[in-house]
Length: 528
Image 1 (cartoon, one colour):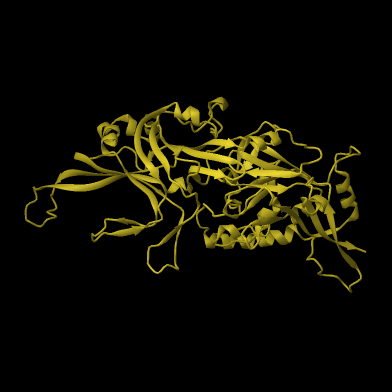
Image 2 (cartoon, rainbow, N blue to C red):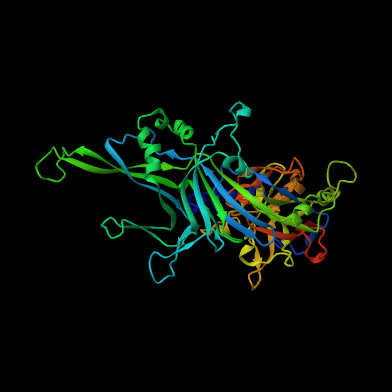
């Protein structure tokens, strides 16, 4: 699956890799390479253990926190298994420099909104300036409207005495839309274009930039909103301005059963007002010897969208799957895991089975600790249910395995120093990308948790529940709040899972196909 994050800083990542490599040695000192360090060939026996008592089930995530994300989405997406989702957006506009002074006789000329797409230059193309859009799904246009919003977005939660950050959720669209103001812009048939943007075409200042959503907004609206308010308290600071102009709401309306969805980085978006004003040419810029001429000067005022931004979803989640997720067997596990990003569902995995003797530890784990094995490698291999998943581009490229109980990544994520310019290969030792067949259909994912298992078996770490989520990327290690009816303690999901709208179905521990059941495989050395 294509990534929506910025390129990694190679130098910083290289330094991080050196540090993580050292951590790997320190943290994993009890494990050895499979088949290695066998003295005399008779002192050690290398074997395989399978945790067949692992329990796995799914949990619905119908209401997810969607502010403070690393990327956002607009459009409509139809998952062949889970149904349709339309993604709208509410965002705050703020000055780069508050309190603008427009000088004498100012007049707004253009108001330009710019939202860059994720794209790469096609170096194989015969022509220059040919781009390939990244993180765009679907091939049908949609209706795009931009409204003024009159809903005030708080930075801090008043219920906490304004001490905690304010959370906003994916289901607040109806509330936001009840506060809509004027229609600012409309495109009745919008579709992201891969064409490069040429600025000042034909002039000496001509510039070519990467593809972006770049449109002119109505000058009269912004003249009344900003120019006519010059010098007022409403423009004196960004806090005052965000109370005066409370935001812009981007609304998508599908034009049919399909549509298009694209991802973007809101911190790269901008709005620019180009204006002119008059001044006395005291510097005699036209070199006519007259320093009393009145000249027209071009200037601009710039805005950014780095305040609060919230994605809201209108999801038509599959009723059949919703019914299944409402009755999950959390004791014995389920035949299938239903994973869907956004307002979707995650997998819950519990290792080592029940605690029948009531000592607070799974019986199978107690036996493992007593064996004093050296764990060389430990993997969760999860198979795609190819009878239910169509395959191809609709399948997620990556899954995210994490500590569900403590809302954090596993130690194997932290020490995995695999990195690449292609984010699909980032952390690929721990979180292996989907393995595909010759027809590009997904087969399985391999998720390595060697150090996590060593910490449990040899260092007495807690055997926590694991979460498994579809993600748009694995680079972000942040988490967002989830409100779900299945259990109050299943309350978080990786932020990359909120960004993703894709879904899949995996074989669980109770799958009718015993060869594809989810299980933990441990490769260990048993000192004789």
